[in-house]
Length: 219
Image 1 (cartoon, rainbow, N blue to C red):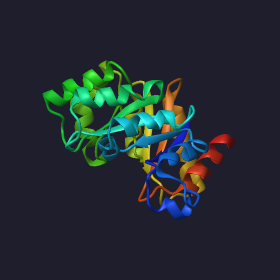
Image 2: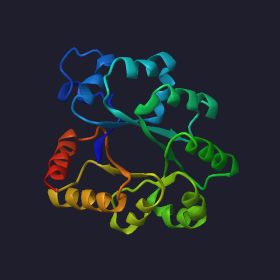
Image 3: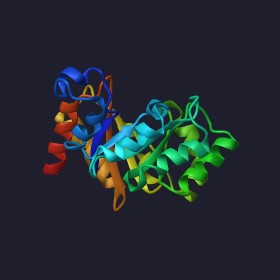
Image 4: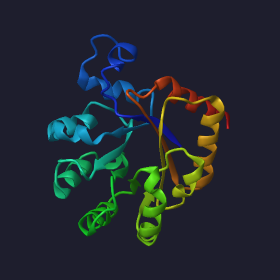
């Protein structure tokens, strides 16, 4: 299992995590020294090809990337986004497609296209999970497509599909017991597949990320 955070350019981390004066272009490498995976938020892609290419040149072999794509955002087209993702080479563990509603035929075609090159995980509000699961069950089962889990016991069945078992949970409000439950559920559902646990927040609490890693090592 890979455990990490959503994003690495959080202003709050400038004082609490990154050393004083650390250049912004060095922060991903600093993060990668401690954490094996990170979500690239949808908003980061607007920084352009040169910056995205530097994410590889400024780091060694870590972290691995989960690439977020929010379909409702005004971001690069499918071809442009695929080119940017391809520039990250084999450091991409998967693509997280964020849906705010039922995808239309064009979006479903885009998901199929993305799934040809990388595992794709669909992220939708938990309130819509049952409805979307019913409509997309055959599509999800037939593709390299999984469903993002948000840590609630009610929807843990979302982890059964696709090549990637991915959980995205808020970093606040956890106890060691709740973290252990999330880790055990994710491991049991993943089986032989790659499992990824991402902590979200404004900013993500890295102490919780560290605590999850300690608990994982004890399991």
